[in-house]
Length: 351
Ligand code: NAD
Ligand code: LMR
Image 1 (cartoon, helix red, strand yellow):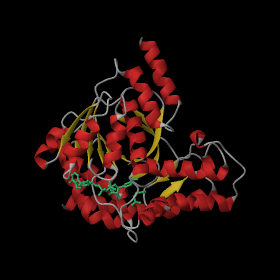
Image 2: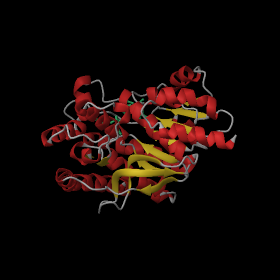
Image 3: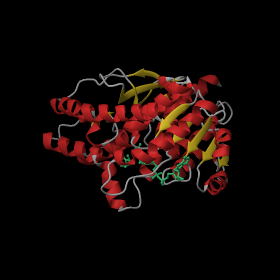
């Protein structure tokens, strides 16, 4: 039984993160009897990202308890999602008084709470509102589920992750292995754009994306993309890099004032949370890019490939060999990323 479960887990792992919902549904038959109890809490569950992310997490058979919290409209979202005939037990929490209950016992807390961009704004323009939201939610996490893995989606990720780290340090609960800035959407975009340009099957594509999650701090490493191709010249790589860096803005402009990426982000958030769950459950060799505490560069936080395990980060992987173009990109991103990190730390220390 155990051998066949491990075999199934391995086949799921090998199949990668390309077709989450279909795999999630199929896997429910494999895991229902022996899967560990895993509670996932989503803070901001009624929002543009929160709703489809709640749906995708309800489809994930590794989730046994799904806790949906928002200050606006959660009972409706929770009631709706709870009717889906998958095993996860869904509960909705709508007021700040219920935040503790929403968080208690959570293994993973996903945070898409906060305001999104409108055209003309940078992610940093969201700092003034979202910094406070993230700080108060992380204060509650420190109190009610100090050992949970945190997946930070709220922007600006380059600052909200350092804010979270400071809040946890102040509370004496900081574990650098358990705090993740979700940069999976950058990887999802890089894979999609590369596959289209290189004319290779998108499901087979892998592209690491390092640095941070804003403009030029997003650095896709197309020199390491697989399957490799000689079909792309320097100008193609430059254009692919720029499109990946501007992917969020492309959506913000297309939505013309009605928010930023929600559906692709929900997909990316579900992929990353699924990887964290697999890591927690002991599935070997789960590697995703994420913005984490790091010594890969001189900056205290940096996105790179991370091996996930039973305690969160098992290993932060290095950058590998970079092209001259990528080396230059790496040097240019450092000042902006450094100042966004420092801004987050300063905010948390002073507030
Ligand atoms: P949205 O406005 O549609 O939803 C945000 C939700 O957060 C709302 O339902 C709101 O009620 C809720 N909320 C606000 N304050 C809260 C609090 N204190 N506690 C609980 N819930 C609270 O926004 P959205 O489109 O879902 O985007 C959410 C955030 O995600 C934004 O900051 C956006 O920039 C960011 N984002 C990040 C990425 C990424 O790649 N990391 C991608 C897309 C969007
Ligand atoms: C994205 O990359 O889509 C998000 O960070 C949202 C945004 O503001 O661009």
